[in-house]
Structures are given as structure tokens and as C-alpha cells.
Amino acid sequence: MKLVIAFVVVVTACKQDDKPQPAPVPSRSAPAAAATADAAQAAAAAPQPCPTGPALKDALAKALAIEADDITEISCNEIATPKQLWAIDAITAPGMYVGTLALLDARDGNLVSKQSTGESDRGLAKATITIADLDGDGVQELLRSATVGANGFANETLYVFAVRSDKLVEVGKLPVRSENTGAVAIKMAKPKEHYECQSAMKVIDGAPGKKQIEIVGEKYTGKPPGAECPPIGRRSYAFDGKVLKPAK
Image 1 (cartoon, helix red, strand yellow):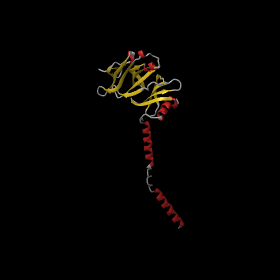
Image 2: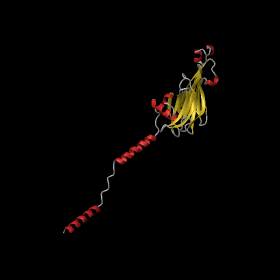
Image 3: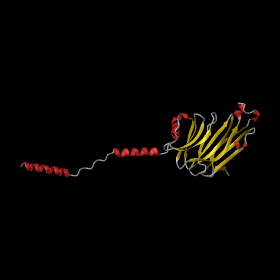
Image 4: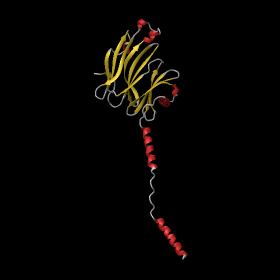
């Protein structure tokens, strides 16, 4: 009798084991974690705006492998090319004050290209950067208005750069101003030798989808070097994708 009871118990247990087991409940946390990771990865890969303050110096210092404290002046502009880039214009020290114009990838801050803008003495005006799509092709150009000089002599030139193969290539330049006012003040030039020319520069609308550079020569005093001064009056200039030339 005991053997019969044992047999029944074993058979019953086996039948219970043969019953189909319910499917495991999928974890709700796994998809959520995956979605969060994907979102974080997408955010990291998305172009970011220019950093500001100390973060901007840190970004350039990392890209150039220099110390952030060695950067004395810096500015950043976002520029749209086939890539989204940061165009960073900076003066670095110690030693000679050397200008650098660098393109960094806006997604990760990696260095794309860099070029020297020459030595820069203290006291000169900081370069002004303007970003505009001059020829309407969807790729923006960079306009850099920079002052050079020494001993009270100074002249300013507007350099126009196009982005080609991830590098800035100069496609034209225009005189903006020239003067020796400081030289007269420190007696490096005689008062009768004083000269000055000034102008105002801005980007204006051109043909549909395009921009032009407008320079208005406003002031002439004495006999400034002709090559360093814009003509008196209003002039506009267009970029045809190859060179900068007077607009029609």
C-alpha cells in the first residue's frame, strides 16, 4: 500500500513539473536604461554652443596642449560648415604674444585645424570676428578685422576666410583704418606728420540668400598710406565662392 501511495505522489509531482511555466515578466528598467544611454550618447554627439568663461580657455588649452593660464585673450564664434565648428581667436603667452585662430569640433572640442595670426603687442585692439554666409552656399565664411602696429602706428585690415577641407583659407582682404595718432602722442612722429583714416564695416544683404561686406570710408586726416585706407564713401564687396571683389 505504501508503494502505491509513493507512486501516486511521484506521478503527481511530475505532472505539475510538465505544466507550462508562465513567461518571465520583462524588466521595465532595462529599456528605460537603454533609452537613457542612447539619449546621453546622442546629446554627446550633438554640436554644442561655444563654451564661455573659464570653460572656453580650458577647451582651447586642451586642444592646443597648453596651459589655460597662458591664454590672455580669447573669443569663440560658432561657424556652420559641413561640420559644426567653434572658431576660436586667441592670444597666448608667456614669451611673445602670439595670435592663434583655431577650429574645434563643436561635438567634442577636438582640434580640427589651427593657424597663426602673428605676434600681437599689448595695447592693440582685439580682433573682431564676424560670421556670415557670403555666397549663399550654406557654408559660412569668417571675417576677421585685426589691428597690427607698434610705436604708436596702427593699421586695421579685414581678412575674409573660407572654410575648405576643414581649414580656413584667406580669400580676400580689405583695408579698414590706419593712423599714427599714438606715435605723435609719444613723439615718435611730428604733429605735422599726423595722419588718420577711419571707416565703418558691416555685413548687409546682397542677392537672395547671399550677404555682402559694406565699408564706408568716413575720415581722412593728413596723408595716410593709401594701401592702408579704404576709399571715402560707401563700397560693398561680394564673395563668389572663389574670391572677394567689388559688388556690382
